Structure formats: C-alpha cells, structure tokens
Image (tube, rainbow, N blue to C red; front, side, top):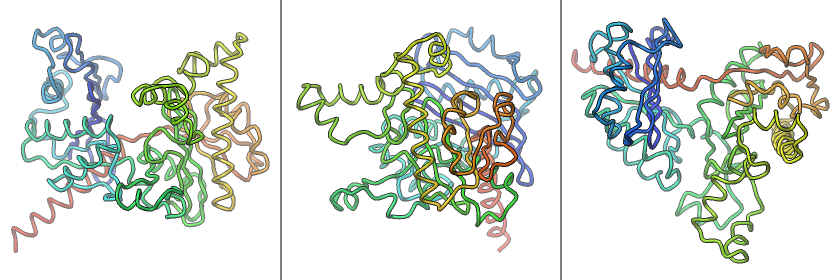
Length: 417
C-alpha cells in the first residue's frame, strides 16, 4: 500500500511517500513545495534511490510559467513529480491508497489518529481558535486532496493525541472552571507524534517491560517541548493550551509570569497584536541574543559573545528544570531522550542540560556524546541518555496504512454480507 504523508503549512506543503506492508513502511520519496501563491514558488524533491538528487521532472515544473497559486495546485505538482518516469514512484495516481495529514490540534475529541469525515473536519475547524496558525492550512490540504484524490481515504494524525492520557491534575489550569467547561482552556501539549515515536524507541532500548518504564523525552528545536512518559503513556508535557508554553524556544518565551502580557499592554501601552507578535516572533533565544539558530549562537558564544552565552545557559536551565520536575512526577527516571534539530545535533547543549543529572544516576560519556552515539550515557549510569532521531512522518504513514486497511477489510466484509 502506497501512502502519501502531507504536512501542510500556510504557504508550503511537505510530502513523503511510503510503501507500507505488514506494519513496516519503506520511504520512497520526499519533498516540499514552498512559497505557494507567490511568483517565486518552487519545489524541492528527492526519491529514495537518490536521496539528494532532484527528479527529472523538477526543473521543468519549476521553470513552468504557471503559478502554484494554492494548495490544490501544489498537490497537483507533487503528483506530476511522483508520476515522473525517472523517479518511478508511481505509474498511476490511483496507486496512492491513503493520505495521512499532520494536524496540530485535535482538542479533547481525539485520542488517536482517525479517518477523516465531515465530523472530523468540523472538529478540526472548531480547534482553529486554539491553533490559528496551524489548523487552517491542514484543512486546506485535506480539501485539496479531496479534489485531487477523489475517494481516497484520508487520515488525520493529531499532535495532541499522544498527550490525551495526561491526568486532570496535570492538564487543568488553576483558573475559574468555567474557562475549561465553556471554552476548553486546559493543557493540550504538542509534538505528540515525535514524543510517541522516540519514547517507543527508548522503551525498546531499555529492554524492560513497558509498564515499568519512566522516560523523559526532549524534543528540542526552534519549537521545543518536554514530555514525561510513564508506562508508555504521557502523564505530563511542557507545552500547554498553545505551542507557546513550556521551555524557552527559538522565538517563543515558554512559561512566563502570567501578568507579563497585561504589564505589556497596561504599563507599556502595547496593543494586543504587538504583544502577540513579541511573544510569538521576537522572544526566546532571538529576544535574548538576536539569533534563533542554535548553531550561530554556539559559534558566537565560543567567540565570547556574552548575550549568546546567556541564551545558551537559559535554554539549558529551563530544559533541566522540566527534566527534574518530571523525574519527581514519575518517582524516578530510566531514560532521557534527545530528539529534533537541537536535541539530535548539539552535543554541547546536551552536555549542558545533563550537567547536574548525576543525582538521577545519569552521567554523560563525552566521547559518545561528541560522536552522536545512540546512547550517550556512561556504562555505570542507572538513568540512561539517548539520542534518537525523530520520524513523525513514519508514524503518520503507519497509522494511515493501518486505518485504511481496516476500512478496506470492513468494506469487503459488508459486501460479502
């Protein structure tokens, strides 16, 4: 079964194609359409046989005079690439048997991936007020696929689903209960597909019964979140109602004194839009040192830039705080996992974060850490530290294939009866 996985942004569509069989998924192709709606829109792509080499159809498509005006046009262009003879991914578009979509917010309605129907679309629309930057583009992708792939089952895979097991004492805010009951104000959490994937991989590495495991997963990138996973289930996570909460990030502040936005409006005279822009796009690492790429910050800190050094120290401090908190919540910790752009690639930051983790029994092996081994803790460590590359698209593909196969089986059974 060939499955198309889409991650749709406001002006971009990332895609991957997998061949799924027996619970396994083989990566066939990947790419991105960027700057949709502009005269400079372009596509980058590769196939599994030549990961870094563009397919033969790409140059002609990018040089075409027709503008990639919307998400439907973008998905049509993706189909052109997949049908390219040189790539050999598809002979006919009908080979795509299922389409999986990353959807950031599913609210309280979805605790697992689900086949998309009118009810699901309505629920995603309702959650747009909680994720106004992310859910509307996902809906555009879903509707575009309805036109380009008529009749092909589509599946929504929610970032929030993995966090649906968080208990009430962890997801409620100490606010008037009416805000929760009437408006859904609570902690939801994000990056759930990533936390799910790497926590499962960590359980495999621990080689102990899943129900006994206590794993802290650190998804660290331009957007960052930490999760506590006990017995394979998430019991707490750092992001909250929106992806702004939790640890310090590239341009977002993470947790703040809740009065600060009011101070910014009342005392400083900032408008609501100015506060929104400051908190979403001008804070975090960028606000402290003027840079949000950790590679640039590390380099400048090594050259003596005090602001960049402060940003590094603040980031490590806040991640460490959540690790300590979650270890307490789980009565210990068997593994700490690092993933995503910073987590997977920044050995110096991993070491900073774990500098005081000796009380948990976790000690960094510098040679393993510098060479990006899967396990970076010493042999004597009782709490192990892992670097596990995330693969959210693989989770989306396998969930999509599973749900489509189940639906096909039910349809066949109904036809027989």
